[in-house]
Length: 188
Picture (cartoon, rainbow, N blue to C red):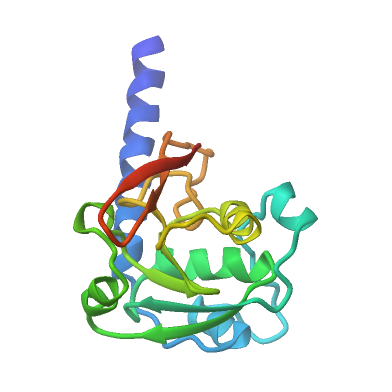
C-alpha cells in the first residue's frame, strides 16, 4: 500500500516538474500592464487573476512606485509569474520582451554561472532570476557595494516557480560584483 502511494506521489511530482519546466515555453503576449498580463494568462475581463504570494517582510516595507525594468522572452510563463510577484510587492515594473536576453546580462555584468531566465534593473542594481521581493527590498535598504543579486537557475518554490503542493527546494541568493567576486547574500 505504501509503495502505491509513493509511486502516485512520485508520478505527480514528475508531472509538476515537467509543467514548471515547460512554463518558460508557454506562448504569451508582451506585457506592459497588469491588464495585459491578465489577458495573456487567459483570464476574462472582470475575472480575478491569482497573484503570486508576497512575503510579509515585503508588505511591511513596500517599494511603492520604485521603477524596475525586467528583460525577458515573450513566452516565459515563470518570468510573468515573477513579474506579478514584484508588482504585488510595490515595484513599478516595465517589461521589455526580447528574443534574447543574453546581451542585457552581458551589458550589466551578470556572471554566466549565475544566469537565469530574466534580468531586472532596479535603482542601479541588477536582479537576476527568481529573487524574492523581500530580498530586493533588503538590498535597496542596505545598498551593498555590489552590481546585483541573483538566484541562479530556476529553483522550485522560488517566486515565479511555485508548484501545487508547495514544494520548495533550498537555494542561495548570490551577490555579485563587477570584478567577478560573488558571495551568498541570503539562503532560502
